[in-house]
Length: 320
Ligand SMILES: Cc1ncc(COP(=O)(O)O)c(C=O)c1O
Image 1 (cartoon, rainbow, N blue to C red):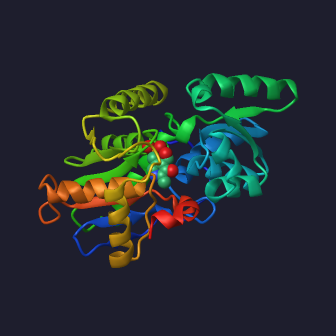
Image 2: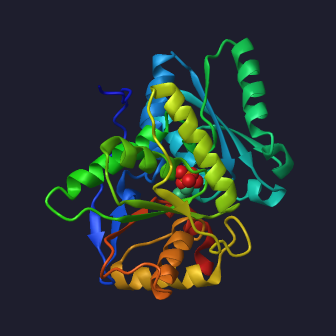
């Protein structure tokens, strides 16, 4: 039985896999597109199809002021002839820095409303409140939660896992897949992919870029529980784990060891990571190899480059 819902085709798949000189492979989801590049577009293909099915006229979502997810949503909505409203968590000075992802979201005409850190804690209520107001104005709103990380969005990285299986058809499958974790949807999707394909011995390792393992383990359980309820599956989260200790001072705050690894990867492989997500996750991978917890000789390791190129430019002084 095919459980997978229909989806839009908004990106360029399959994304290529690059073989690094250190024995690790990198799947370049950074090349899933240009304006819509990165991991979010995989989830949005399913979520925006659902929005169209429901005859929605405006997409509401939320994230940080430099959110990749909000930028990809704003661009994709515009391509589909839909409006978008972004509730962006920001400080006074961040809201004035129209650069990177915020610049692109602004350029494509997304309606942007800045909210405080405190308001962000009740973001789901705020989204629901704005949706109600828009309904009264005659719009048909469709809410996408932070990061597109819900049961439906999980099909995005479940499909990515299928894509990886195909790319490894006559080769040994990866037994370790490492990704950054910000709202858990990427890990959740990969976990669904492992379960639905019946793949054995493949561990999904999420590197939190905010909060911690305990928080994300719970959030993962919730998404998978919703998924099982919605699709009648028995997906479990046994194949997933999170590793702590690689955030530095906080979310999106540049972390020196990660900045050094970003430079090394750029100069050895020509691959550009960002300071907020992929740089911190790659630094974790390098550190786990150094500690002997992962071994590119005996493990088959895949790192997924989940995008984020637009947040490099506003902070370029920190990279050099
Ligand atoms: C570039 C990038 N990588 C990774 C992540 C984390 O993915 P997820 O939110 O699915 O955990 C995000 C967004 O949060 C992102 O923008």
